[in-house]
Image 1: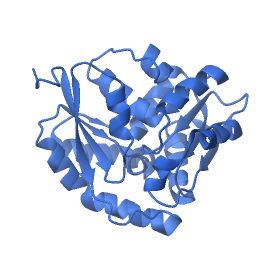
Image 2 (image 1 turned 180 degrees about the vertical axis):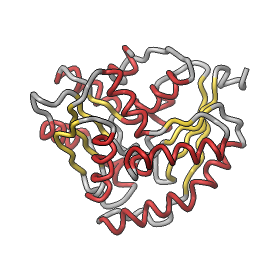
Image 3 (image 1 turned 135 degrees about the vertical axis):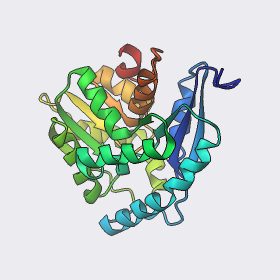
Length: 247
């Protein structure tokens, strides 16, 4: 037994200090015997209103991630899950691989990242032509598009919500997200992918994919799915999309 509340596994979850959504989404899944220990990356200046601001925000993440990992490791987790996404897409496929290797070397644990989780999910779902949206600025959307393209997918469209601060990501409402999906969807798009872990989208993605008749992948659902499946757990979860319900 790992511990009383995490009898099957404890996942260390690395999140920006501005993020209020990731842990909520994971606990909402109601998985028996799975516990989470968050390590927080300190974000003293959450501005991300333009490309320069976004690069500065990424610098804050890079400066504080080692401390967040250190703190999560004190709970003796079985896996590290990156509850943030931009950094995991940066540098394309090679950048993601290097990022994951640094974390494996640092922790000695298996690692789940948003970029790899979305790639694995799309392969499992058999989808190749995709549309993507994020809360980001153009500089980050280019990196997201680069990753998916290098991973062998056709990116039909990608759009960013241009949130002015990291906290504003969590304030984006259902109506705006529905508008974005309507703008991105087309008959040639096989799946829609959402990145940006502070967007509250898991439940709405489940609703939208039933309406559209195609996968709508929320990144927090994808990372939880990846962490579970890579750890050998086959739990099926309702209300979080076809990925966690059927795959």
